[in-house]
Length: 452
Image (tube, rainbow, N blue to C red):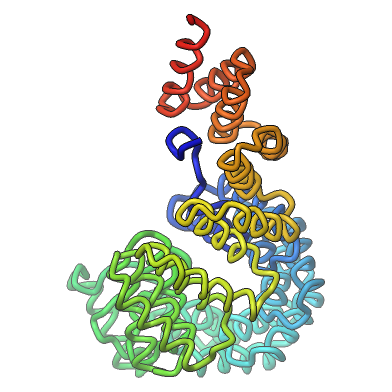
């Protein structure tokens, strides 16, 4: 092929987790529920046992008011991992929407049993108890929620409603004041005098400690957050969302705060490395990965990320060594097999070894169309064009709209002098993407041959 007209898919098909993140971001940042669900369904096709995909799907369905379907998703997550606190919490929340408060209470209890520090589970447990007429227990749950997070506006509101039912209007009003302040989704610097007055009342009551700093993200409501109160996981989660939205400077700040809290958190070092790599600061990113691996040398994901960064730097042998370490710790890491194959094939022209890697990736995920395309490319470079065509055909069975598969199949047919079939492939590629320059060039080659 000469590498001119055939496409190598560098990054490959997204992993299940990457499709989940894409779907969640579309949902939270742009409100695109259906598109978000489509991407999460892609994740589940890749990995039906991806717990995060089932959790995300359940969350989006909940927002659409499809509570029964949401419960089924959380049940799927629990079939995979009975000890997932969020799955129990999500199931409980949706059962509550269906007015199944006894069942919801059981779920919140299970969630709390696994993670007793989840203030939202305590708050929702209180709400379920209140619906069941067990007001004293409900108050205890709201109190526990507020011990864990004094800024929980919903817990303050629910507590206020308990006081109102008892005729204690002073306490009910106090709780409502605090709830209203905490529910305001505005930057402190933009607050009017009236709003500041509300905020001061809340501070006077000793309920909130406001630093004048607000960290927003689309998936979690961090409004008037005291920096000192945010834990490591909170900062990491905020950073992940910022990074996935392309806000790399904000993400870096979040991971820096996480590491101030705990310099030995390997996950935070890994995430910081990933963000720096996206900013093109590759050498510093590698240093972050090395810090993570000193803490835990068995983390396959960190070895993989380090390998990706070496690949970006063109340090192919270093990249391969990292992919091998990732696979040593996780032989089922399909993306490591795939990426190793790309480096071997596209960058080092070691096509037989590349084919072996793509085959290993396909054993783990037979529906990875990008691996099939790159396997076909490697066969093409070895002038084994019939085998290449079979790979492209298999890729097109999975995704008939893949422009690269149509283009590369056409180029393989061109190499076999089957010009009519080749031209059909290039036409199909151009029907899908009229701006595909490679298909245009290839079509010209066919036209020149047929004029001879």
